[in-house]
Amino acid sequence: MPTDCIPFRDTNYFSSLICDYLDEKEQLKPFYNRYPNLENFKLQIDEKQSSFNTASREVLVSSLQSQYKGVSVSESTTINIEVLKNTNAFTVTTGHQLNLFTGPLYFFYKIVSTINLCKQLKATYPNYNFVPIYWMASEDHDFDEINYFNFDGKKIQWNREAAGAVGELDLEGLDQVYEVFSGQLNSTNNAQELKELFKSSYLKHQNLTDAMRFLVNELFKDYGLVILDGNDKQLKQLFVPYMEDELVNQSAFELVSETNQQINNSTNQHYKIQVNPREINLFYLHKNLRERIVEVDGMYNVLGTDISWSKDEILKEVNSNPERFSPNVILRPLYEEVILPNLCYIGGGGELAYWLQLKSNFEAQKVAFPILLLRNSVLLISEKQLEKLQKLQLSVKDLFLNQDQLLTKVTEIHSEIDIDFSAQKKHLKQQFEGLYQLAKQTDKSFTGAVAAQERKQIKGLVHLEKRLLKAQKRKLNEVLDRATELQNELFPNQSLQERYHNFSEFYVNHGKELISTLIQNLDPLKGEFLALKV
Image (tube, rainbow, N blue to C red; front, side):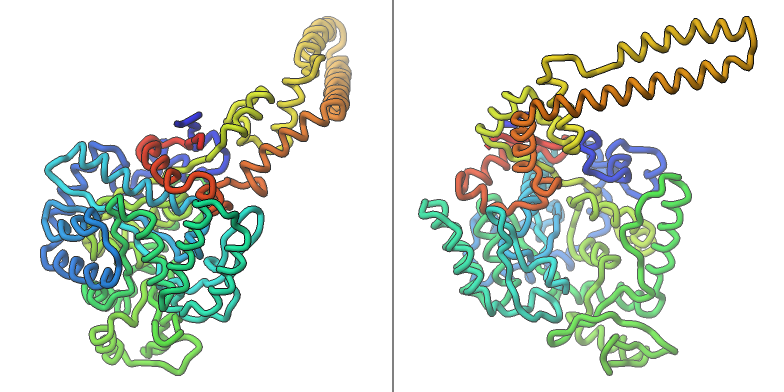
């Protein structure tokens, strides 16, 4: 059951860009299509339905059926794949890297937000079907970002040499990771389930893509989640015309660069630009290789290799072997929307920030730009932690303060004497008002001396207030230690819990109920940070 809901802006953990988007600030409206509310989804359905063709649906379903061969597929997931053939079926999509054992907790919040939005859309628009999609980022090549997860304050890491797309990596060395992880677990039933889940995922498959598909399917198949690997020849065949355009016209570079300039100029907010386009936003994939394609003097080269083509040769290559071409962060969203009957992309703040840079390229390519929705964010808090919070006379919202502010607040609450000198400062200012009036009646040059004395007196009160606060903090050391310990438990390294902890830490105590609790409580359209008792 939720214990509190906090506006994203009030948490101080989200960028001004995302907060302004959530507030529907006028200056950002040119950079997205429709704001995420239930009414706007009907307009999005109409737009996507008119532009997405049946032939693409057939290819999509065929690819999914092929990708799921050998996987134990639930009835709900099987039905969701089949309904995608129909023109009244649409997707809601989230994507994520192939982090070891799912990585940080927010992976779960992405998936649950996607599942729950599909439920809400079905309830609102019963004549349509809505399929939750998890897009596996199997073509990413930053191994260091995905090769670990945190458990019980320790980093469980997969150490090996890696090159090329991470999804194609074999699973060498994960037996050693399994031994380390299993050694950290107790002997409860939930812990045994975690051991078996890790073992079945990573010790019984050939590559990281297959392992991740198995893992996520085991966790979420009961909710009809469909897992999609974009590294697929059939699907990339649908994207060939857009890759040809990218290679020949390089239009994304100009359009996105112009949008970036508009974001900076028109908003006057100095928003951080999340990504910058390349002249060619494609990589070449081949045998442990994923490297950028560049054009130099009419020849197309793969950086760091001796692979090169003329214009005609590379166009022939992209038609013959489209699976060897991999869109980067600028083109991947376009690829996704070309191959899926998608209505909405659900992501974190950083993801939505770069999506807001891409609308002009979608318009130029005549591809519907999806609704953008910030995923749910959650603070999982135990009954014991809530009791500690209550004893400290704090609210959940107080925990989002930086630690100095939090400790000051705790001191003010628990101090037996008043350490707020606001009344004294107000009284002092009133006294100086009389001196200012006197200065006006005598010598105006006296006003400067009065002002200087006022500043000195106020500064002295501020100094005394700080000294008193410091003294009271020493006196209340034990209470402050409890507050510090609690905040550090819930905000490790002064960061959000969801960005550090792995789901396994909570699964040990709650088992499958963890997922059902999230399904029951996360409302993707509410637009607030949820504190959830578990």
